[in-house]
Amino acid sequence: MLKIFDEKINGFLFTIILPLLLFSMSYYGFESSYTRLKTAERPPDYLFSSVYAYRVIPNYLSVYLTDVMAYIIDNYLSFFQKFLHKNGTAFYHGLFLMNSFFFVLSSIVFDKLLRINPVEILLNKNVRRLIHLVAIFFIVITQYAPTNCDMMALFCYLTGIFLTLKYLQTNTSSYFYILVALIFVSTFVRETACLNIAFFAALFLNIDELKRRNYKFIWKTIPLVIAFLVAYLGLRLMVVQKTTFVEGFYINRNFESPFNLAGLLFGSIVLYFVYLLCVSVENRIIFKKYLFFSLPYLIMITMVGLYWEVRLFLPLILTGIVVAFYHFKNSLKLA
Image (cartoon, rainbow, N blue to C red; front, top):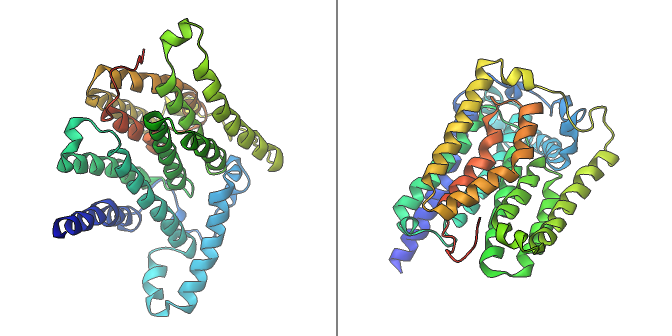
């Protein structure tokens, strides 16, 4: 009984408290040279007048939490006001609370992902904790470019990975239907939801079955695609903006700026390192298929994103870690 209690305490400290402390250091221990959100009194206007306007759930929460934090600081934390005002605004503190909440949830989900049908090496809890800690550091280090949507989107994405693996493991339809609903809802958070489709396709695509004209995989994937497109296109019909699909094309910047080239190099090296971690041929095949189906996302990063914002590579990196240590059955024909 005492051993079980110790395990729960250790899990709580390692999965929640330590990540939260690291996250706090990234928001309050040093200031980003990339953004000026720490001095913003209200959510910036560009969140509501550009492609960011389609991320309606985090934008709404940002406005709500800014008002809540301002009220709490003025009415209940008068003894703490000087410290809080020195280290940010009501908007920034609200942003930290929202992001740290979904960051902790992401940490919990990632821990569960490492426990689903793991390879033998992850049965050692100390090894599993080290892998988890590496993932946490990758998340924290990307927060030099904080946004109000990335942590929420990451939680939704990792939850989608969890549902996909549970569906693969149990073939229970409820996991699939929840995944479809999650993709629809999470598209209102960030377009990263499309990567859940890529992961699903990587697991269930079977080349041999396609050669035999068995298109069951395609029919399974269609509901996921429809859920994403309905939400994605519906948002652009309901929320009218001058910049409907992209804010601008930054492909020249990505290959001219040393910072952006450094970001590309970082993402490439880490993904290659994760690929080398794959414990078997099956795992490497799955990871390569995932990267193949993620090409539209990678192309969009190249065209309209900035490589220096390495948080954009984060879903791919975390997925690679999960794939590298998942025990895929040898009976599955994965190529």
